[in-house]
Length: 115
Length: 113
Image (cartoon, rainbow over all chains, first blue to last red; front, side, top):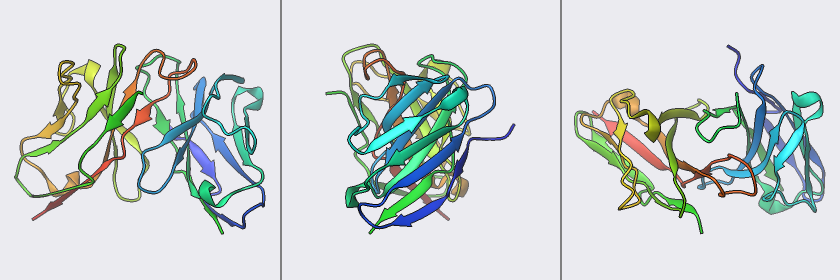
């Protein structure tokens, strides 16, 4: 089966600019996650969707980050305006269900550099 | 606060030597523990979960609730085991409502011949 797709793979912007990332989960997967992975750290949750609804956005810096999952399939994550500390790899993951034991399948990530 | 600790940033062993990657967690509820692995130029993928109690690629991990540990072990390391390994925790109440994972910082395993 096709895996989780993300684009772009790399992005370089200047601080205060805006940027958007796109994710296409595995077909049929109800749950979609966005994680942020700063160099030297493990992934950290930004937001979780179930179908097109937000399950958890408690970790999302809402003053600059936004995300949506229209029609319960693809998702976009936006940063506006970007700060230097947003430089990280942004990982999208999906799982079939919403259980704690459901395997999460990860995309290749988008590496963002903010100058 | 809930967290996952992987004390070793890098673990270097020779081929055929035993491997133990350490993982400790802090969580008051009933934990679900996982090991994820990222090989060079590949995406993060699930290696094993404690509930399965199975051996994957020769790796095993036992959940020790008394010591709040979930160490990953393999009796004889192979060069193809070289990768970044992340321990991850899931459980009720970790987040507002969701089922997302809390990851450790990861341990790079380097196996040389």
